[in-house]
Length: 326
Length: 244
Image 1 (cartoon, each protein chain N blue to C red):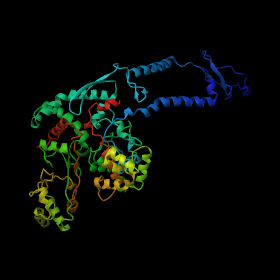
Image 2: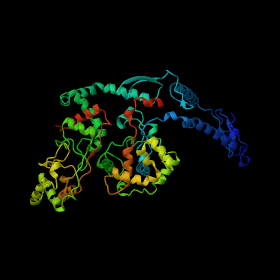
Image 3: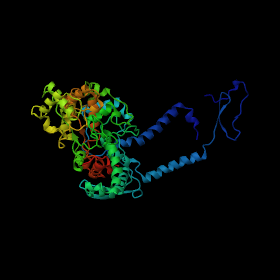
Image 4: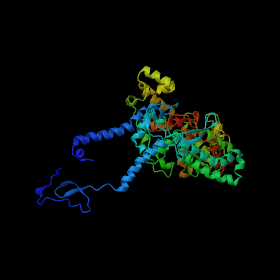
């Protein structure tokens, strides 16, 4: 704190010792020999500072900046305006010019994107489903754009390659389709979503009967089962007491219109039968499903999230790109 | 320039420092209180229902905001991935808001309805069972913990103090009916908060376990409504430009 020279430190009064470059000191000294040089700020730094100050003024001319009352300055009119085309609620397009702002610029950028992809999306929209697959050039676009759409929207459930997750979401790459694998059916699934449901049977049939039904279900796909119990289950399957046939069909092959499972193929969605080793475990997990039912298998609708042309493209991607479409 | 006077006199230094900071504050902050123009006039935005609010509190408790933002910026890449850019109006009842630019996980501003309740539940319990490349931690306790909603009324009251229009009196309730419609207003009534929380959880069955009201119910209820309040089909593409 002391600005006085510290004569008591043992040395004689000290002159500034760091002035050899001709740089003066502030005249303060601490502990007798610590002094503070007063170097001027570097030229480049000072100029950079001035330039930033000038830049702010230029910025005010070009961009929205100062709040004024209940509004704000929007730059000099016409100096940095943006002209965009916007679609109105009624479907018409209008062209408008505004001061520079991010939301207008965003619309211009989105329009540029749409313009770049327009010829391809128009072609997808105009081509009937079964002919898109014939057009190799168009399929190239479908495959690359479809992969992006699929990764973002579908992969979280159906996985990146469309292979699904047993116990959660169906495999889209095989030939088995719960709600149908034709173009129109796949499109309907994407547009409206799906809701899987199977009622619980524990209140409807006895525990023994559930065991019989489970044995029958296992027998249908060649899994180990009790033959006697399964034949009782087969009869029960067709009765109105259990009523299994109503959803799964008399042939147990499922009904696409309601998305009921085909019980005769070896494809399992809710019970991971192939992973289980012992017949007891397999029987137990099938019994659990019959007894408790299923209230899962919800696929959200995408009609509000994706545009119709994107949905059509995605349909082709699922049908053709992932394979297995019918 | 003589800095000496200022630097050697603490009193003057203090006063001048405060003057400098206040000037900056006045110029930058005060005008924002008067710019109503920047909050879009838009239909559908409402305060959180009690169950959603409880879910939001859990979202904050678990630190979800450390990796997930809730603010889609008006950039092409963000719109393509996440949907329509976020509006100021959409977070006007948020205390604290969940904006941000630090994203380890994806932005969640429009995650509502994108996945099923089943997916959200399974994904929160074990993210890698559905998204193999995910680095998100597991949150298995959410599905086990009973939801503590004993103080839900107090939580609504605290927000009411900050200006969120939860209703305490009949007059406030009537005002909400006028502003939000009877269906929404009933959920904003503080005396009925607990009843409404339970009924929403039972109807929604968010954690896919109908027997238990868990923290998962609340968090998924919150996630499923994010970004779903405004129907953008009702507005011209450029309607929101005039607020900027």
